[in-house]
Length: 337
Image 1 (spheres, rainbow, N blue to C red):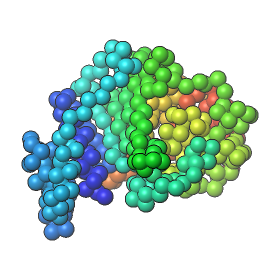
Image 2: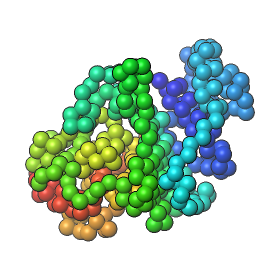
Image 3: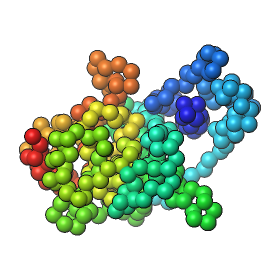
Image 4: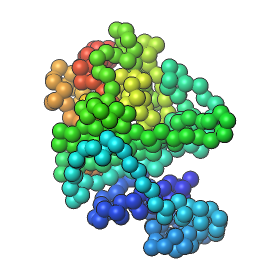
């Protein structure tokens, strides 16, 4: 599985080479150093030719020539994407002030397990291949603010005839007053309705992890009742908010990371929402939203080691509407022990 994730990172590295200098600021959960079964250390990278890349991958894949050639072909293929909304908007972002967070496979366990027959609950999949996402988020180096995000849901829909999976792509840009996103190219400031809660009643709908603490779950049950959902994958849970299936994604633990939240954060900003530090939200329950800190992506946690340097300490809350957030945080905080 690690070699597959690294191969996806290689594909992204090649794309960024089209923008000189940016490839030095591509960050992610995986590194490009690999040790194969013969204890041979290999630096995985995109070579100048497809044949050279295949030869390198063959060493990583324990001499599996067919797999190496297939992956090398995918890495070197040219991909052209066009979008009318993006083509119509003149957004110019300086390359020397941006960096990228990448998660090649979010919800890895669900990908490995490969469950295809999970039924959704009110449109939300609690587990299964539908929870797997590919996350690419762009942020400003000087401020740490997310400005562009892409989420690919590779196993969004399975064709009942061909039995092949169809993917779904979501993107958003929020930069210098320009807010555009996939789904509604005619509306440059909002892509979803924010007039009322998604549930249509007096409660809010939220999604969280089954690993959430008992105290937080009790408070969420008061706010959401039967509209509290559980799902796998931080990226997928954020996607549920983006799609309007729930109003909030809340998680109090420190086990999500910058590569999990950067891409959906940018998309949510383009929708008028965002992702905040949950702990700080609780502390500042009576303050205005503008005084609450959004999660930033340019600095690591002091004194932390390894991946924990990039953890979202204090948890997170993802939302689409600041108005709903105010009411939600107020009720939620009052019901915490």
